[in-house]
Amino acid sequence: YKGVIPMTNNKLYARDEYLKKKAADSNGLNIQLTNNYAFRKTFKNTYIAKGFLMALLGLKEDEIADLKVTDPFEEGESEQEKEGILDIKTGKEYNDKLQFHVVQLKKLENAAKEEKETELYYWAKLLAAKDWKEVDDTIKGNPYREAVKDEMYKMSQDERERYLYLREEMAYSDEISRMKTAREEGLEEGRKEGRKEGKQLFLQCIRLKKQGFSKEKIAEECQVDIPEVEEILKEIEDL
Image 1 (cartoon, one colour):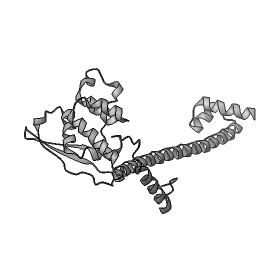
Image 2 (cartoon, one colour):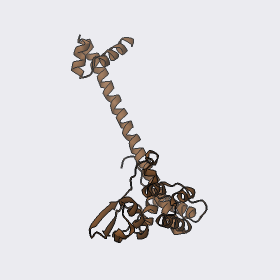
Image 3 (cartoon, helix red, strand yellow):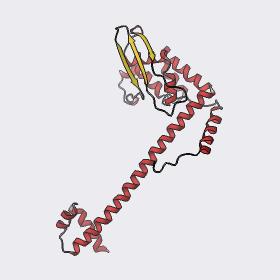
Image 4 (cartoon, helix red, strand yellow):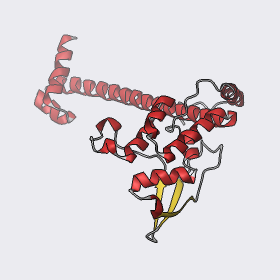
């Protein structure tokens, strides 16, 4: 891809060593469920997935007869996008399949008062929590969200889990950088093309003016608005 230089083995090794060193330090690591690895690792737990789906679908506990994640991701595959499929069998004897890759919920600050009193709202707050205090504020005595907190805490205390979490974090940061670089290159390419077209229009206006064309006729020939031609002709006069 233009503009993106593949990393050498030395750079990859250095990055990996940096992540391992950082993962070895357990102090101050906030686990956030916006991290793809943390989210998928946590919701692989069927008890947690059950509690979330109860809130999401408005089901009671006894209405979910069976639930399993039929295609859980493999640990360490954070750079390879996979979808988890939740196969739900309810007491009403029908199957629903929910595919989730990224849970998109309404912006929390825009939630109505009645929405803020629902279990789903607190799940949304939990998914968006940025530190342990915000996590604690979402529990509200719900055993399923308490289980989420436990999983997050266990992740924060395990060196390998911290490494996989941090690796996903770095991969996401790299992807944002690549997107930003691509966008900037696209804008610069557009500016270059615009300058080239502007120069061509300028020269064409000079040529037609010398041939005695009126500004209206120049605009018609160049397929631009008359005010744009007037601006170019004024620049010519000022030269």
